[in-house]
Image (cartoon, rainbow, N blue to C red; front, side, top):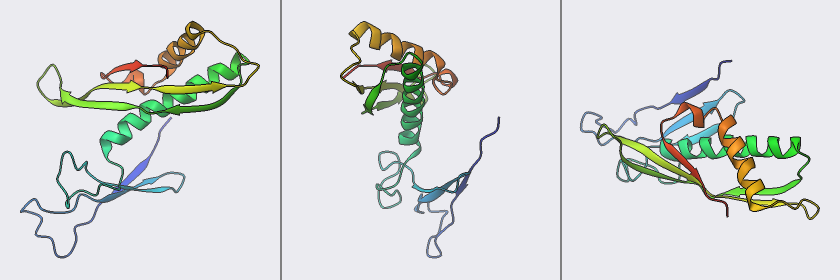
Length: 153
């Protein structure tokens, strides 16, 4: 399987560029046609060269892990006939130095809050097992070195 995304950036006419004060604002264009405003993080490249209202790669990385985990969790729950009414994750990523001393996303914590229907009664251990299985199946999580933890809310 192959997945494709187009990333497009263009220098503004009034920018010198070589002074390193150019806009990092760019566009992600997904194969389904959705376009998303993207930029460097204002924590990495200061405003106004970054755009705080756009998605930055660090946020996208966290969202990708969270989304993959959620999709597998929902699939496994459905397979077991557990009805999920809602799933919300306030995921957090920590940018720090890795063991090689390089800046890296060193830890991502998923904080899912799962609401099951009133006829689905599961113990905390059963929900933990669903999260464990989802983590094991998430190929995004399997693709990264980042430590990923799950804190049930």
